[in-house]
Amino acid sequence: MPAALEFADVPTQIGTFRIAYQGSTVCVVDLLEHGRKQTGTPLGAVRRKPPFPSESPPRQLQEYFRGDRTAFDLDVNPDTASEFDRAIWKILRAVPAGKTISYSELGRRSGHPASARAVGGAMARNPIPIVIPCHRVIGTEGSITGFGLGLWRKRWLLDLEGAWPIRSRSAEGPRHKGQRTLDGSSHEERKGPRSK
Image 1 (cartoon, rainbow, N blue to C red):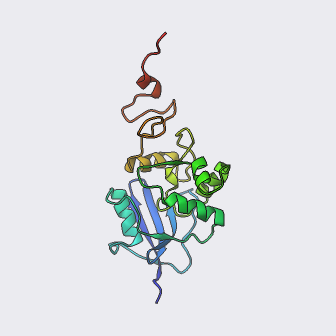
Image 2 (image 1 turned 90 degrees about the vertical axis):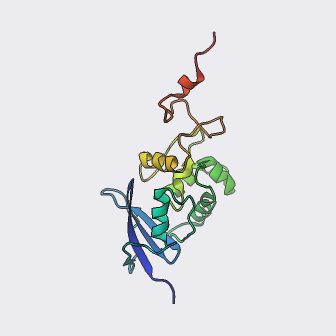
Image 3 (image 1 turned 90 degrees about the horizontal axis):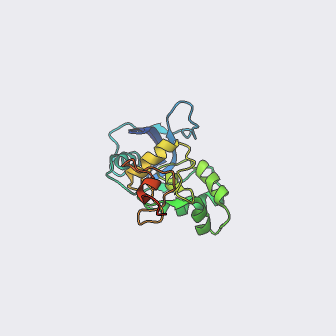
């Protein structure tokens, strides 16, 4: 007998997420915030209340936000997605916590090297954020761009995973000129005075 289609609400530091799943396969993750676009809970899904079973999707989401989990042991099955979107999301799921990838690099790895905008569209259509980690996708120069849940949440998630602040031309990753680090210094301040 197949597992029941269930959904659960998981409160986190950045808002309450509703996760819909069947067994270990996730089909929706929505941020429950007034005015925020929702994918919606699938018809027929039954509400699951805490405590959540070990290794269940809502338990894994709780563990992620507590900092006890860096990778999800879950399958994904978004009900509406093109082949392109699914291919991009599959590659993105291989990017580990603590790492980032640019839109253009994600397009290149998918076999579509000139598709940075299309990759951005796939990120915008992602119905399973966090599990399909679109927050790990950044601009070519390391800029924090486009995230349907809000840029402040994207920064928060990257910080949780140890990928923020982002730095370029260093072992820590990309950095753009205007970016400030957690110590409050800017790129220009760290470079020091220019020699004449």
